[in-house]
Structure formats: C-alpha cells, structure tokens
Length: 114
Image (cartoon, rainbow, N blue to C red; front, side, top):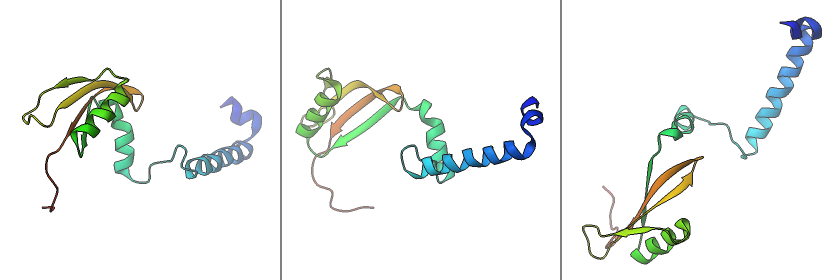
C-alpha cells in the first residue's frame, strides 16, 4: 500500500503492464515457454510426482548403450521375461528431481496400431 501511495496508481499500473509484456515476450521465445493448455500446466505442476521413467528402445543394444551413457556406466542389469530383452535401471536427475529410469527393448516389429 505504501508503494501505491508513493508512486501513484497509474505509475504502478504502467510498470506492471510492462512487466507482463516482458514476460509474454520471454515466454514466447520458447526458452521457458508458458503452458498453452491446462493439461500442459498440470504436467508442469505435477512433475514433483514423477518417481519412475520407462524408456523403451527398438533393440537391446540400443537400450544398453543409452543406459550406459545416461548412467555414466552405473546401470544395473536384470533379466526380464525374455532372455533377449534385458532391463537396465539407474538413477537420473530429470525435471529438477531424482528419478529411477528403467530402460528396456522390444522384440519383433510393429506392424499395426489398434
């Protein structure tokens, strides 16, 4: 209230409108883009709830290589239901928090979509 009294309402309003314009310009550059839809805003707001990330590669060699690179060689390997498709797990820093990444691969080819 003291600021309003000292500067005057019109001065404060013009400064606030300039700040809003600068924010719109900054967000419009794509650097820290403002969410366009409520779903995007929910995704940003709910990022704190992400604990586990699943990554699926096309081939087991790709899953192994990607997990080695992302984990700096500290990925744990375990057997899955298929002897050809291993499961690699490691901790990773994503969206400003630590998450567990599970990396695996698929067998066969995707021929259709249901």
